[in-house]
Amino acid sequence: MKYVYFIYGSITSAQRASQLLGTIGIASGVSRAPKEMSIDGCAHVARAAETRLTEAIGLLRQQRLPPKSVVTGNGDGRYVRLEV
Image (cartoon, rainbow, N blue to C red):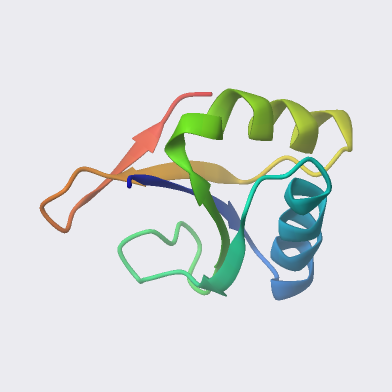
């Protein structure tokens, strides 16, 4: 399964995002972002299945909790920023 990572500057924002996603049945987890994903140093991510990207980003924007960036893995260990 491919995942999409919603990048936040704080653990609190990532946790809130993960909880919000859970309210509509999107399984999500929170972790520290790998250095390759981070934009401004330390960051945290809320992870969700890539198949639910449109639904997830819509909810996060509607609830005024948009991520700094959205990233997905391309299968070979590298990450690709998505324009959403």
